[in-house]
Length: 109
Image (cartoon, rainbow, N blue to C red; front, side, top):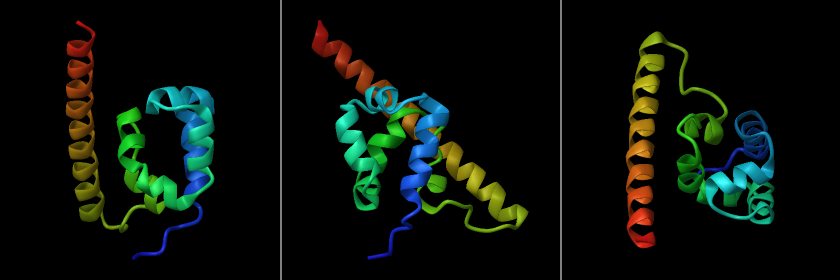
């Protein structure tokens, strides 16, 4: 197994503050409690295991940055490919969010 960057906890804290303003708001976006997100946020292993859930919270979340802390390369080709990949992931997140909301709406009826 690849070693997990221990700075992922700092990046998650930065993401939480910048996009959501508080751990409580982030926890609501992820669909869980602040205490659960606090425990996840302090454990790099749990952050990695929760990437899917975190990614669904907001389409602006760059999971590549959260996981690695940097882009994979510095060439313009690599940057373009990463941008395309990030856009693809954002589209997937939008699609999954719509599907979840549709199912939740169907359950409420």
